[in-house]
Image (cartoon, one colour):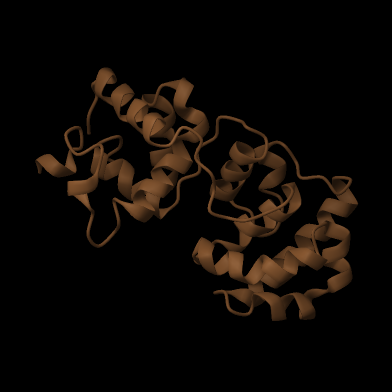
Length: 210
């Protein structure tokens, strides 16, 4: 794990140069649909989620419309996704809770977000970061893998990696840390075969020096 502050700063300066305004691969048209897309993305690719929600979000883009659609019809839209039965149930419960407790609005704090069915810490962090522009870092398998390969962390759990990143990455970059690392892990530093020869971090990366 690198502890050199200048190296870490340069890593994220390069991310910023390479992709100054990273976007989530999930397609959503408002805060509610982004929250649902994040929920659906667990154990599933963003590409598959977008395919499932393309027609769904045309008719159910609010908690009220989702409740009107109902769990059975919702299941038909997302049946191509893993764990679609559990996810359908959670989306209906989440939508009802938003209507009953939060005036149909997505909460802007992690404590309340984690009370929503199907929303854990990672998902809550992603929502707070992307929807509310707050400095939270969501750690999925890509973020965990890339952080350890580059040398930003030497931890094994998402919570440990999240805390490590918050500690070592300069605050000015916190806004996009998750997106940069996710996209890097998805397209360059892939799980099976990292494309080191085309990586703009190859000379700073601990994986290259092993």
